Length: 257
Image 1: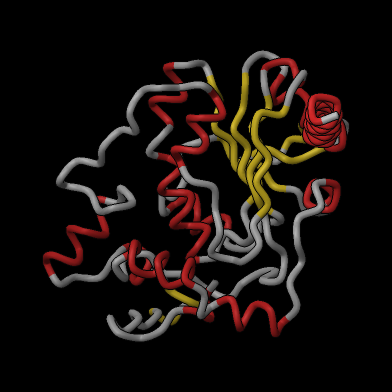
Image 2: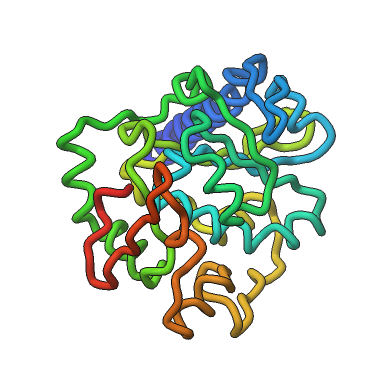
């Protein structure tokens, strides 16, 4: 009896795993026929073409001005040389052009960049959309505090764009035959860990270390500015022709997520 029970339990677990795998695999099919626009020319590209010739890591950003997204983009970019070595493409997708120029000029992301103004990819993947109350409370989460700590006050953000939509990350195997990882952010500060990305890809190389001239997120210019007591490139920008005031070192930046 015990043996039969164990066999039945094992069979149920196997079926459950197969169902979960089918659900994950179908995520590539859900967005494969959708279209995004490639930066900077904004030519339309069918998403399935992104993984046609090589495996891809695709991260879906909340907003280009989101301080959490900029931090995550910096951390992901550390993997770019390693992903290139293993023929894996790094791709980022945002929702619109709001804040795009600052994001590009700030060198926050080393991969290919696309936008999805319709947000159809976000909807198809079931990425969470927050309420205003949910956004406010998320600022006090552990993930938010850790993200601010990592940025060391050197990455700034703004309130431009849709602040309610969350993103996530998927890793699709070459040819789209399998989704190796599917990560859905629950809060604005959530993002997949670099080690989880490498594990999903079966890459055993160590994560590249950021050299001493860079910050924890690899932004050399910001660290030099901090050391010299000068403004960062982000702080030097103007808003409607008026120089923007640099954020105080101890000023909470939660509202810029």
